[in-house]
Every structure is written in C-alpha cells, then in structure tokens.
Length: 304
Image (cartoon, rainbow, N blue to C red; front, side, top):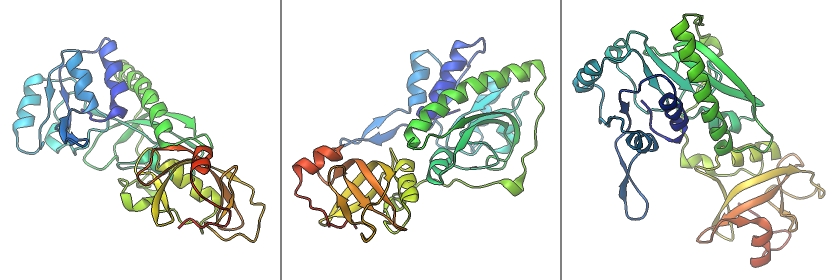
C-alpha cells in the first residue's frame, strides 16, 4: 500500500526479492497539469509495468476493501506513504501484521511530512524507521532504524530521494528479520514524540528578520514544494537555493540586497544569505547570476 515517489523503491525492492507481491493498493488517479488530465500515482505505474493487480479505493471503511484483502490472503501488508488510515479490521487481517516504512527516526516526526520538517528544523541527523502498525498515527512498535546525516545545504527533495532508497533496504532487512523471528519490537516513548504536519502554501513566506540559518532551512525545507518566497517590486520571487554567508555591512536591514555578485541578502541578527537559485513571477527558474544580469536590480533594494 503506497502512493508517491517515496514508496516506489520499496515496491521495486519487493518485486526483485523472493517475496510475492499479490496486489498493490494506492490512491485514486488525480487530475494534474494545465489540461487537468488524470495522472496515475507512481506506485500504480510501477505495479502495472510488472503485471501486479492494482486497487484504488476511495475509502477503506465500506467493508469492500476488507473483503478484497481477505480474498488475497496476504501474510503481511507493507505500507509506505499510502495516504489513508488503515481501519482496525485491516490491521488485524494479515498473520504477520502491517509494516510501515516511515521517513524519520521515530518517535520524532510522526505525521505526513517528516522529511521536510527535519530539514525545516535544522536537524543534523534523520533516518528511516520500520514499525508494526497499530491504530495510532505512526505510534506502532519500532522494528528497525537506519540513520543518516543531513548535509548543511541538502534540500528536502534531495533527502527524500536518499531516504526512499534507505527505506527500501531497511524494509528487506525487516522482512528478513520477521521471517527469522529475531527482531525485538521496541515500544515508542510517547514523551519524546514530535509531530510533522502536512505542508501548506502559507508556510512559504520568508521572514527576513529571522537569522540566516532559519531562512536557509526554510528555503531548503520547502524545496521542491511549496517553495520559499518573498516579493521584489511587488512581484512574487521564489527562492530555491541559498547558503548562509558573512554579512559585511552590519548596518543593512533585514531583506536588504547588500551585494549583487554574488546576490547577498541581509537577514536578522547581523546575518545574511547568498541566493543561488530563484524564479521571478512569470519568469523561468534560473541562477541568481543570470537573474542579476537580466534584471534591473540595485544594491539597497528590499525584498519583502
């Protein structure tokens, strides 16, 4: 059971393994793009390429899905970023339970956007966790974990790709441990739990009064979506990549452009970021060097 790109490596790993994938459950096709054409989830595309039966129920609570899964008689259900809550009856159905691959070191960052919030909060370390699912939100017993360092300039998208690959390897290791019976389940410490809610477009606004480290974390945490943004001459300016740098002009106010080559903007607390990649409203995404060459911008301009 899975839907987005994050779940694809796990399904690929299962297909390549000795395990038999009897069916895939994923979200219904969604309308995308300018033509609003129905687009299948990445997991569905992979499953169909391998001739695996695909189910896309609108709800899991009408009894029909339970009937279908009962007929499939799975030993175990693997859930990776499916996007739906599994009812108690489905959780209890497979003999070996339901196993979830989650993109954080639980109990930290339970919820829909663990990878992005780890970057937004400036974490230095994150990872993936496999757990035995229960009725709570990412509250089940921990099976295995794998850690990784978060690089200083790594974006959520880049970390997402790394963790999805790590998750696939950890899943196979977990299934091997379940078969051998040598995994010791670990209860989660709810006192140490944190929550990672779904991202919203409203998070995008850059507050230049914040220190450069926080601005930088916002930019990389919201890349590739919804993307950090500010305004320039009344137009939306999306910021895709930055790096913290020393602020030479200590008198500069937050949001002030203090240099053009490189493109440096003052932040709070006497700090600054260099803007590396951006996109002005109605223009294409580009490097700041290309932007400065083609746009009439002067030192002292203020980003809002």
